[in-house]
Length: 93
Image (cartoon, rainbow, N blue to C red; front, side, top):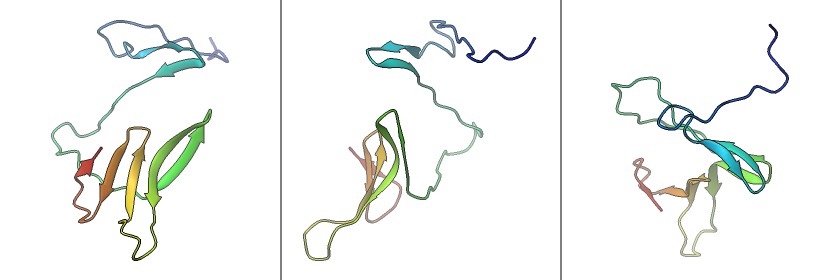
């Protein structure tokens, strides 16, 4: 049987598809994955941005003018995690 044009995904509470559903403007699936369960999960990523259905996703760089009292930073969206100097991987919200 061929893969259908639209693949159904069933909501199964307490299983891997327990975070799918509908909201006023559509549907969603939330998931977190990892490839190395014994690793500490520390990664490094280049800034990027992608807008899907009007929602901005990315690691968005925020540059400020010298002397304006603001430090450059990067914001992980849509999670709202902010990264900045000393660029040690720790975040603020």
